[in-house]
Amino acid sequence: MKWLLYCLVAILSLLAPAQAKTLVKVGAYEFPPYVQIQQQQASGLTVELISQLNQLQQQYHFELVLTTAVRRHQDFQQGLFDAIFFEDINWGWHNKGLAMQQSPAFARDDEVFIALLSKAGSQQWFDNLQGKSIAGILGYHYRIANYETDPARLATEYLMIPVTDHFASVELVLKGRTDTAIVTRTFIKQYLSVNPQHHDALLISERIDQSYGMQLLLRESHPLDIATLYQWLHLILQQPGFHQTLAEHGLQLLPIVPPQ
Image (cartoon, rainbow, N blue to C red):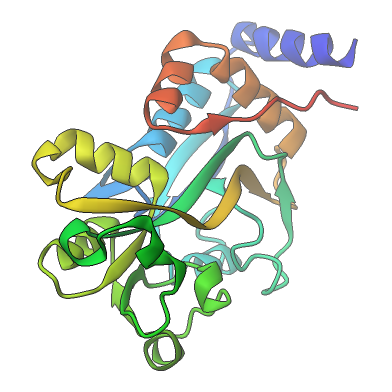
């Protein structure tokens, strides 16, 4: 019954009279295919989800706010944005004591390693990465590096080469400037579909650095509650177009958790 009421509220919000909308500022940093930033313009699944949310209801207006992986926690603390999508609560939010509402995970992604096939030869090469250089993105949390984010420690203890985006990681591997790199499974799938000429040059590991559940995170004090936002996401996921887009990017969609 509660499930039906949530759906009814979402439908009725479309019929509500025009009134001032409450702003929901959504933080976004370079994280393809969720957010891709070129010349200060963002695209990707987060941008599509924001558009869908604004079309679905008339009570709130969702607006994109650019940040960076390194700066996102500080920007949130300073009130520059209220929510962040396709995020994991374990990526530094708990450690910094930030008050966030969190939705159940609605999709899963993995981080894998890539290397030149001519260098690695086989999957066994990925079994022991000690002494091998690894390209990784500043501000990201990697299990192989014990979730450390300090660039100096990453460089000395884990031979991590800092980059600012996944494209740079792949380029370093292709040019032989790093032994390996960590990328999301969704990104490398997207990258090779656009750049098929590199498909035979790269070896993608079966080894997974980490798997994570993608969540919606929302400021605890915001007028919008996470349960409502999560139910709107459920309605959007039922639309064939958006559902298909997520599937095409290789995201594993998780069962929606009904409200209690």
